[in-house]
Each structure stands twice: as structure tokens, then as C-alpha cells.
Image (tube, rainbow, N blue to C red; front, top):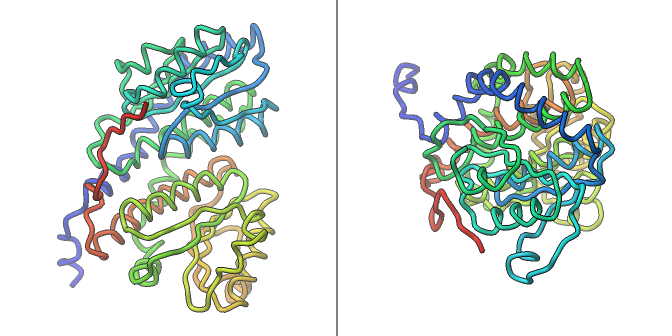
Length: 358
């Protein structure tokens, strides 16, 4: 039986997700001088605020940027609505702003148009993009390569994780956080450990026959919850909603039902106790919480009360990096889940790899 399982063909989505650890090593080396140049430019005239531009998985990466820029740099950060510029023709005052656009293809007209406008009005513009010869890259003052190589699967995996690592790398350099830089160098090895198939094995059985769920996190983990919910939808056809552990208590919690699985992500910071308490509460109501957490944070005697299922991750490097490890572990599972539910994760229905919005 074991030999037979080893012969199961992996989806392109899963194969690409498994390329990430090696790619991050290359990305960190290549982008170090590029990010140093960007930070030098910003330090000459510190930005007043920041704007992020993205769609889909890239917009989830933008949410991660918001948490990093606000908590580590004190820089107020907002997510752009490109239609304000492309459809409503608004003129935005973006002088002395930092504007970051994130995209795998760099081809979406609305994202390109907004970045062009930002540069024309005096913003420092940055494109974190996989295709460095794309229109988006040409529109930016600074180009930070994602370094994912070709991504064939419609569902983004490696380009998303590498967007996160690029953002963490930028934050570490700009904030002069030498400890975070050190932990980033350890990230590839940690991601390799996270790819062990056994980690999410229980989730395959519990999520196979459902049609809806919640994905819950807080702080640095919330953008990962957004991405996991998106992947549940686009690959496995499960209606998943991402919630902050704080926001879910304001109404959606009434939808928690007995014997239904829910996914919670935890990281090693001040949000931890809140996530653990919420997991306990879901379990007490009869729900089945899956708690994804660095294994060093959980004592064995607490397992039974914390959650129905514990999905242990490698030891925490840094709260900023814990969510990157978590989504790395999640991607192979959801790719397998899609196949188990009769879907092709590489070619979701009604979707294209490059989506051009105006």
C-alpha cells in the first residue's frame, strides 16, 4: 500500500508549492541589494503613509504588508481600490507615499494604471512582481522580483509565499531588525519541514464532505486565513470565509455548528491566547476546531481541551514568519483535498491564470 501511495501523481499546484523552500534561498540573495536601495531611497524622505495594490492572492499578500508596515514601521497602510482611479477617474494625493503593487503576472490593466498614477503624483512606487518585464514592472520606480519562476497552476502558491517572504525581507531591512534577518535565513529549512504529509492528514477526511467552513486567525496570521479561504473556494469548491478571531465574535459565531470542522491558525505572539480560547469555545459548542500551531507552543496535557485536531508546525522562528510556514503546510493538503472532492486544482472551473481587470 505504501509503494502504491508513493506513485500517486501530484498536481501541478502541489508540485509548485513544494518548490518554495529552494526558491526563497535564491530570492533572499537576489533581493538583498535591491531592497537596500529601496530602503535608502525611503530613508532620504520618509513616506507619510503607504498604499497597497493587488487582486486575489496578491491582495491577501497586501494584507500581510499592512500588518508588517503598521506594526514594525508605524506606517499607516491602506488597501487601494483601483476602480477609484480607472473607473471613477479620481485624482489621489499620493505625494510622499509608499505605494506597493503585488502581482504574479504584472499584466492587470487596473493595477498598472494605478501604479502609474501614483508615480506621476510623486509616490515612491514598488512592484513586487514575478514577471519583471511586465507592464507593472515598467510602471514602477523599484522592482522587487518574486523569483517564483513559471507558475503553471491557476491557483497561486509559490508566488504567494514568495511575495510574503519579500515583504518580510523588506521590513527587516527597513526596520534594521537583524534578528528577523537571521530568522529569514532559517526559513527555507523550516518550510521543508512543514511539507511533511502527515501534518494535515486528518483534515483531508474531515473537510472532504463539507461545503462550507470558517478559517480564523488574527494579526500576522489573518492574511493567511484569507488565502486559505480563497484556496478552499477556488480549488475544492468549499464556501470558506476568513475571519479575524476578534471579528467572528460580532455575529458570525452564531453559524458555528456541531460536528462541523473549522480551521484556526495561531502564531507565537500576543494573539495566541485569544486563538486558543476561541478554539476551546468552538469545541465546547460541539464544533470541530483544527488548530494549526507551532508544536513548541502546546503542552501535551492541554491538547484534549484546546481543539478536536492539532496540526503541529515546526518550531516558531518569529511571529512574522509563523504564518508563512503555516500556509506552506496548508497548500499540499488543499490540493489533495480538491482531487479527493473530484476537482482539478490546476484548472479551477471558470478561472484563468491571468485575470485582467479594468
